[in-house]
Amino acid sequence: MRITHLQMTRQAIDYMSDSLYKLGEANWRAADGKKFHKPSDDPTAMASSLNIRSAIRTNEAYLDTAFSTSEWMTVTEHALMEVVEVSTLAQNKVLAGVSDTSGAAERQSYAVELTGLIDQLVETANTKLRDKYIFAGFATSTEPYSITTGTPDTLAFAGNNGIIYRNIAPGQTVQVNVEAETEFTALFDALVTARDELLANNQPGIQASVALIANALDGINTLRTENGARSRQVDMSMERIEKTQAEMKLLLSNREDVNMAEAISELKFQEVVHQQSYTYLEALKVDLERPYM
Image 1: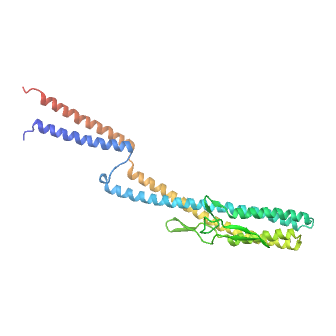
Image 2: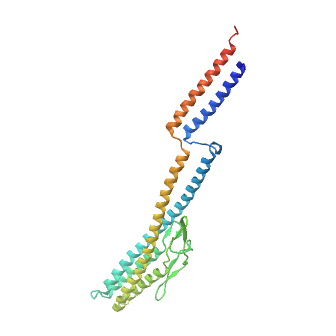
């Protein structure tokens, strides 16, 4: 069968179009470093990548929740630690008031200092993380604690004992807050009792209040222990998810990302092929235009 110049020209144009398409694909891969750009390029690989990306997004949501939970627990620990520090200062004042070397004037002075420490305790019990009160249960927008003046003064609680839970990993739920009303009330009452006994210059009553403060502090330290255990649980969960994230991102990269050295080599090759196709077409054109001898 005789092959005409027209057939050869059409074939050369097809080759050049094909080489131009491949050159464009190679250029895209080298430019953005991805093996495919649309599902039709590699449906199986694209489906796998979408599944991996979905898992990564899910883990990122868990990480965000775990991070905010860890932040809440850290603020809780700092607040409880401050309560212990304030109460220890108060306890030392009460112990000084028990001493036989202290008179009525000294005990009244200690009582005044205890009033300031009690106010500080209540202020700490109203600690906020941004716009949320951390010791108010579900009522996070309500200031939970205030002093009701009386004989004796009492601690009023405007929050509730709701327990906040969060999902920090697949199938893993953790308690975020602590129920501190009982412990705060016991500590407040012990400090108020100690202050009032100091004001009354009642040495036996002052002595009895020392044990009340110690017992109340035990309750606060129990809360710290529980909060610390849950905090470690959250930290371990975050470490596992971050490790999983790193592994999945590496897997995704292996599925999607090209070897840049190979991509650049392929680009150069396609540039040569396209240039050869163009040169061949130009040669056919010249040959077609040459006068027939």
